[in-house]
Structure formats: structure tokens, C-alpha cells
Image (cartoon, rainbow, N blue to C red; front, side, top):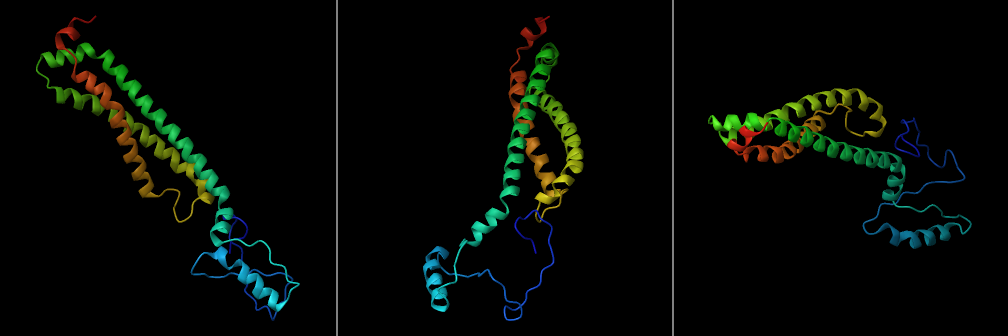
Length: 202
């Protein structure tokens, strides 16, 4: 069983009858059909009818005890999620910036391509393909680094392996969606390039 916090490793425990090993304190668990808080008064009266000297303290619901036991893991998860969101935003800004700069540098080339008959959707596909190439390369390096780094997070994971395939697929899908959104603005600008104006650019 795990005691105190969820991060602690399970320790062996033995259930012994109170008649065999009397203790000075005991935990009592009650299963209720309604709100547990409504039964606190009845429990106190029931215990007082047996022995008025028995104190009842630390009355909590199982949800409250579970929340207290997982507070540290939950805080760490929220903190990691916040850093992940910031990293995702930075990745989107980075992909947008690189793609936008690339479109600006290749304005004349794109104009020549369009003057020679390249369709706008071809230009769009070219810009998106370059953005996807950067994203896939970054995602591959990121997954490789995560494969190593997440082993240190094993204590914070419950029912999920550090190298969970579903999580990796979900992260890749999110990165692909973010990269597409980041590339759409520069790609749209490339599609609207006037070939005559672009060719005259030095």
C-alpha cells in the first residue's frame, strides 16, 4: 500500500483484527449514498453512545484525502504543462518566423515560378512542405530527447508508461497542426505575390 503521498513506493501491510492487536487510534471508512459531510454528526453521536471519551478528529472525504496525497504530483503536472504550453508557443513563433523569412528571401524566385506558370496552390504546397520538413526534424529530435528525459518522470506517472505511444502520436499531431497554422500566413502571402513586382525586386 501507499502511505501519505502517491509518490512513495508501495510498502507491505497486513490487516489484523482489532481483537488481536488493539491500537490507541483507528481509521474508520464509511461508504455513503449521499453527501458524506451530512453524516459527520450522526457518526459523532454513534461513537459517543459507545464511549464519550473517544475523540473524533481529522474527518475528511476520500476525495480530499486523495487530493492531498496527489497534491505534489498534480502541482508538478500543472507546472510541466505550463512549460509545455510556453514551448509550444515558442515553437509556433519560431516556425512562423523562419518560414516568413524564407518567403521574404525567395520572393523573386516565387515570382519567377508564377510567371513561368506555377499555380498558387503549387506555391502554397511548396511553402507548407518546407515548414513540415522543419517541424518533422524538430519533432524527431524532441521525441528522442523526451524518450530519455521522461524516465526521470516515472514517479509522476500513473497507468502511463514514460514512452507511451499514444502520447507520442498526440504530441506529433499537435505539432503538425501548430506548424500548419504557423506556415499558413507566410504561405498565403507567397500566394499573393505579384510576379511582375517580384521579378523587379533586387
